[in-house]
Image 1 (cartoon, one colour):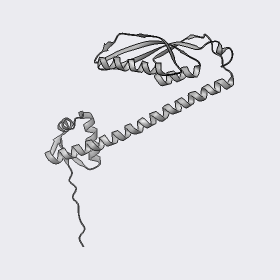
Image 2: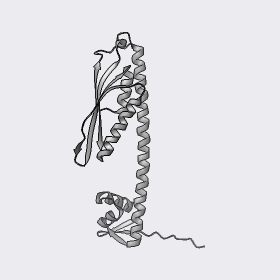
Image 3: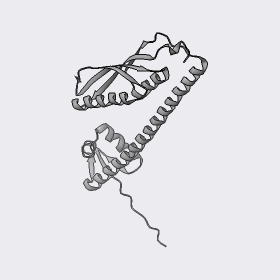
Image 4: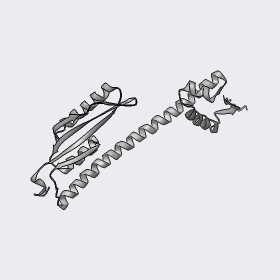
Length: 201
C-alpha cells in the first residue's frame, strides 16, 4: 500500500451466522468455525461476542460478532471469500489509498480467489449431476423390479414403494414411458417385457 495506506492496519467488525440442527451441532460447528479463523496466520481476532441460539421452526440459528485486525485489503477480501460473513464494517482506517501497481496486485489476487471458487462450484456441480444420473437409473431399476414382481401398480403405490413423492414419481414414470420401458393402462403402470429374438438360419 502507499505511505498513506500504511498508517494503520485494517480493523473491522464482522458477523458470522450459523443455521442448522440439532441445537448442539449448531453450537459446536460455529465454535469450530471460529477456531479455524483464529488459526489463520493472517487474521488477529480481538474480540468475539456470541449470541444466544434461537429456534426457527425446526432449525436453530445463532451468530457471533468478531472484531478483527488484518494487515491489508487483500487479506480482508480473502477473509470475505473464505469465511462468508453476513456483514463487514471497517472501523479503521477511515481511508485507504492505493497506487496502480498495488491495485493491480489486489485485483489479480481477487481474480485468483474467484477462479478457485468457480472451479470448486463446477466440481460440485459435476458431482451433483453424476449423483442425480445414478439416482435416476437406480429409481428406474427399482420401478422395473417392482412392476416385474407385482405386475401392475398405480402412481400412488409406486411412489410409496420407491420412497419419492408422487410428483417426482410421475415425472420418472413419464420418462420410462417415453423410453418404452413401461406402459400405462387406465391408472396402472405395467412393465414392457422385451423378448430376445434370435435369428435362425
